[in-house]
Length: 264
Ligand SMILES: Nc1ncnc2c1ncn2[C@@H]1O[C@H](COP(=O)(O)OP(=O)(O)OP(=O)(O)O)[C@@H](O)[C@H]1O
View 1 (cartoon, rainbow, N blue to C red):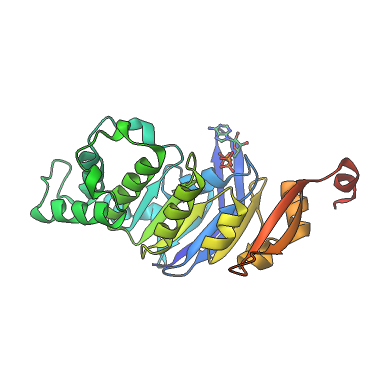
View 2 (cartoon, rainbow, N blue to C red; view 1 turned 45 degrees about the horizontal axis):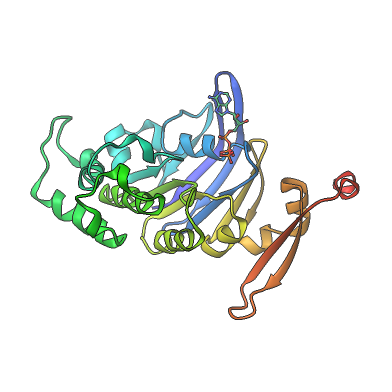
């Protein structure tokens, strides 16, 4: 399913935190959102998963305005993994994943259908967490929790997945595993990431946000040039090739005060 974000502005408590952002993701693409702390990534994503309404502009899924859609219908199409969402569930893993089925039930008090258990079981299997079904969610490690939350999102059977920092608190092996998993899932993915090497490796396109505005977009290695990295992130970047895979990797240093003055 296509995502089109057109001239989107978002306000919180009277402050315009996101301004005129336009972003397009084709069906099945993994599109990354990168930018410094406080640049507006989460605010933008919160508007995409409808925790906030646009102050101007629109978010469209296959051409249909997401904020004009019936909420239940929207939840059947789009699932989200908000930042640090994992501490709120004092439930078993199976119960957490079953929450993903709520948008598919008939009416607010609708009962679980026969298919629901099968769909939830499959979702847990896809993320390699079937063995955790009876565990308490709060007893899981950070990586296990992220897998279970991704399973909950998959149980929602969405066509679009919005992930805000899904690798937070994960060790490097878990980060690579979670992002490899996300790439193979099927839905169109919009994901905020801090690690630029991970973003470059796992995303088809990157959108760079600074001060609530879009400053660059395109294929990762076109976008993540030394000038942009100096200007937006305040770092000096060197590109090197991985000796075995040939993949481009970025190495970072802080800019000196002298270089910072020279940066336009
Ligand atoms: N409820 C709010 N009231 C006022 N300001 C807010 C509110 N929520 C966010 N902000 C501010 O909006 C700006 C953008 O925040 P946001 O969380 O979207 O950035 P971010 O790019 O996701 O940051 P990070 O990478 O640190 O998670 C920040 O300056 C933040 O302090």
